[in-house]
Length: 172
Image 1 (tube, helix red, strand yellow):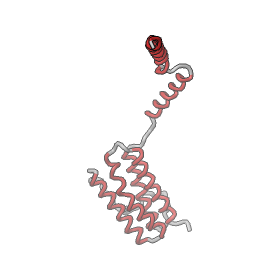
Image 2 (image 1 turned 90 degrees about the vertical axis):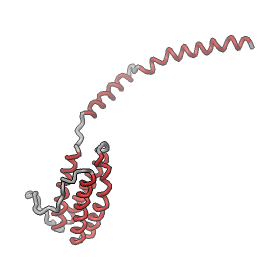
Image 3 (image 1 turned 60 degrees about the horizontal axis):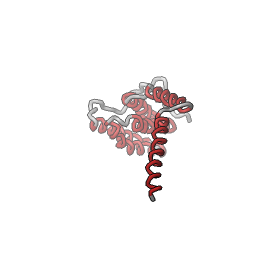
C-alpha cells in the first residue's frame, strides 16, 4: 500500500507536467493552422466590408414593386402581377433576414396576409378582387408606418405610371 501511495503523487505530477507542456501548443496556431486562421481572418474582414442594403433601400424597392403591381393588375397582366407580388414577398423576407437589428422589422409579418390575398386574386385573375386587396395592402402599409412612427410616409394607390419605359399590357 505504501508503494501505491508513493507512486500516485508522482504520477499526478507527471501527467500535470505533460498537460501544461502541451496546452500552450493548443492555443497558438502553427503550420497549416496558421494558414487556416489567416484565411478565416481575411474572410471575416471581407464580410465586414460587404455591402448590405439599408432599410430605406428595401423600402424604395417595395415602393417600385407596389406601383408596378398596381399597373400590372389594372391592365390584367396577371403574369406580370404574379412576378411583382413575388418580388414584394422576397423583399419583405429579405428585410426580416438582413435587418434584424431594426425595430421596424418586427412589424413586417402584418403585411403577409394582404400579400396572400392579392396573390389569390392574381391566381383567380379577378380584377375587382385584385383592386380590393390592393387597397387592403396599401392600407396595411400605412398602418405599419404609423405603428413604427413613420406615419408621415403615406402610401397611396398610384395615380399615374412613373415607368414610362414599361408596357403593362398583357402579352396575349
